[in-house]
Every structure is written in structure tokens, then in C-alpha cells.
Image 1 (cartoon, rainbow, N blue to C red):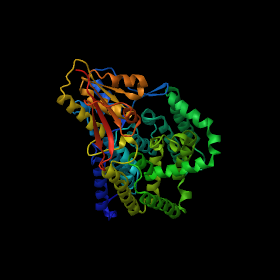
Image 2: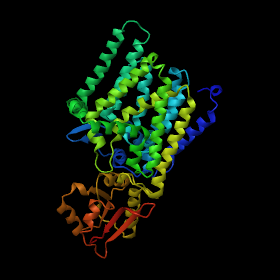
Image 3: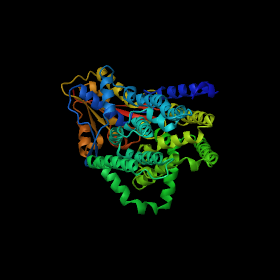
Image 4: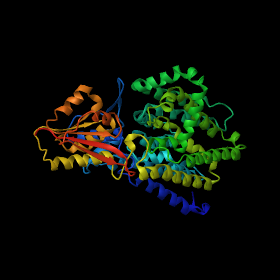
Length: 511
């Protein structure tokens, strides 16, 4: 976007600066630390301490290789930094900034009307992009690979695609669905302006992408399961009209950021969320209406849209169960992350002649992010999924500090390790990560213990033990059945509104 053609240059710069600031503010406590990102940190710390690490995710009976980028960055970071939430989020922030930078730098080579600035603005400000920049999940790396795959496909250079899709599949098998808009876009550009169908390049593309796809099927058992589930469930799934309509709305809620806000912070301002979605729907309708006469000449964008819609509907039989009917307050919106880049590029195409609309939309996205993300988490710690709730400091970090403080105060220097019983995945991994440089502590999970084993620990706390659980959770209810002695103590961590968020029990043993 050249300055002489852009009277809004300072507004564009301001939006970029606000977006970057929004990605950094309160990063050490907002949102609360999730078990998944803490697991990366624990493995990285173990590696630095010489412990053998198996870099895999265990999904049922299958093992899936971990994304190599996050551990590499975390190993380097932890070489000189102590465990902290913001350290775990460095990889996502770097990916977010690098994506924006490469869109601007590389986009100049393929775009002619300043589209690279518009795309960078949307990538910087769209709610899902900002949400995923702020915690260290594998999906946070995906947008960078989407952009690079799109860039090389636009230039008709296919050789980098195997590596990029291999990295995307390692992030999660669902990213394979991004291949459909790419393939459709490439084929349409090969065909564009030619009287005869260019069979040679199209067949080459089909063989090339087919080879990638079947190689990934062979190497990735979860992907085989995903594809088989999708194909075998296509007909029954599409007969369930109510679920299909709900899925279409879910996808739109994903684009507006609603599912991300609900997952992390809870929905506090439903009216403003509705207004945002009405505004977004109006913009899309307006853009299509303005472009209606040019659509016949824009074969590549029609193909891109067709591939994008096809990918979403092919994913539907697999995804509808986990997306529409997740466990309470949980969300798996990251499984349709493959649809976000195609959607944003469509917005750029719709409004590349009306750049001020993208500027307005970017500003609206940022306002929405502050209203629906920051405001609830700052005001009352959020009402979303329990792991993301927070307070004046990160809750599990408070437990870590409190345990350290009690250890010194009570002089718990024993020959055996001090035991910390955590409630579940979302308390275990953060505390195991925080204590990874403290060999005198051992964390275990309550949900991995039988009931009698758990109460055996409580009845004979020798040496002293600590317990950490979310308020009103399963373990909290169990602890109410345990009679606290005069030497035992309970500590409460409040959210900003004063409600108990996390509980810490100290059961003093016979030293």
C-alpha cells in the first residue's frame, strides 16, 4: 500500500501498533496457563536437565510427533530464562509477528494493489489470530505455514509444499484440509486465459498433491482415522439438517472470534457480539454485491472459494461431533483453523478497491477483542474454560509460589521428595513445569489415582503433602469429605471479583 495512494497511512500504522500491543499486554497472566502449553515447557526443561524425552502426543492408542518448532524455541529460551507463562508463549508471538512481516515483504512480489497490507492487517487483528498469538499451542504456528504455502502456490512453485504440509500435519492432521483451496486456486490459474484445458500441469499438480496426501496417510495413523471417519460418515451427517445449520453458524462464529472468546473468557457481552457478527455478515454481503459483475472474470477466486467451502463441508462429518457437542466449557475450534486464512484472503479480494473498509473492519476486530477478551479476564478472571481463568497473577504460578513459601516457613527439608497432588491435566502440567527446576518436589495427578489410593495419601501424609485443585471441581468436593486437622491449612486464590478460583491444601505430616 503506497503512501501516495493511501490517505489512511497513519491509521494503518496505529492499528498495527495496537494489534502488536494487544498481543503482548498481560501475557504472563492472561489467559491462565493451559496444560498443553505447559507440557511443552516441562519436556523442554527435562531435556535441558538430561532427562530422556519422547517428543510425541499420545492420542488414544496412537502416537503423534510433536511440532519441532515450539520445543526448539523453548529449549533455547529456557537455557537462560526461568519457567514462566510468558516464556511458553514466545514461540506463538514470534510466529504471529513473522507471519505479518512475511505477508508484507513477500506479498509485494505477487500482489499489485497493496493487498499484502490489507491481508497483514486482517491477520494482525482478527480475533482468532490474536487469541492464538497469546498462548503456546501448536495451532498458533499454522498461519505462517498457510501463508508460505499460498505464496509458493501463487508463484506456481510447488517444491516447498511437501515440507510445509508435513509441518502442518505435525501440528494437527486437520490442517490437510487447507490443500483443497490451494489445489483449486492453482488449477484455475493454470487454466485461466487458455482455450484448452492444460492437462499436463493440472495432472502434474494432481499427482504431486496426491503423492503428498497418500504419503501423509501412510505416515500418520490419526490422519487415516480422520479421513476414514469423514468419508464413512458423509451421507448420514448431511441428513441431519439441524446439525448442518448449527455447523454453518459455528464456522461463522469462528470467523468472528465468538467461539474463541467463549472458550477463553466466556461470553459477557452477547449484544456487542451479535452486532459484530451482523456487521461482518453485512460487509460480506455488500462486498459480494459490489463484485457480482466481476465474478465471471475472476476464475481463480471462484475456485479458491469453492475449494474453501468444499474443505469445510468435507470436514463436517468428522468435526460436527467435537465442535458442536464438546465437553462443558471446552472448545475445539482449532480443528477448523484451516478455514481462517482462506476466509481472510476472500475479504481482501472483496475490498482491495475499498481499502478503507478493511481498515474499519480491522479497527472493529480490535475493539471486539478488547471488549470480549481483555475486559472479562481483567474484570473477573473470565468465565470460560477453567484452565484459562486468571487473577492478578497466573493461578497455578500462585500455587507454585505459595508451596515454595510454605516449604521454607515450615522447614520441610526432608530426604524424600515433597509430594504435590494435582487435580488433573490442567493443574498437573503447569505445576510440573514450574517445579521442573526444583528436584525436591514431585507432582502427581489425582485423576490417575484410584479413590482408595488418593485417601491413603491423605490419611498418612508422611512427609507433608500439598494438594492443588480448581474450586468446585471434583477434587474440591472430595476434600470436603476429608476432615481437616488443626495442623492442616487451606489457602484460597481469588479471581479479581473475589470468587475462589484455585485451592491449595497443606497437610502437615509427621516429620
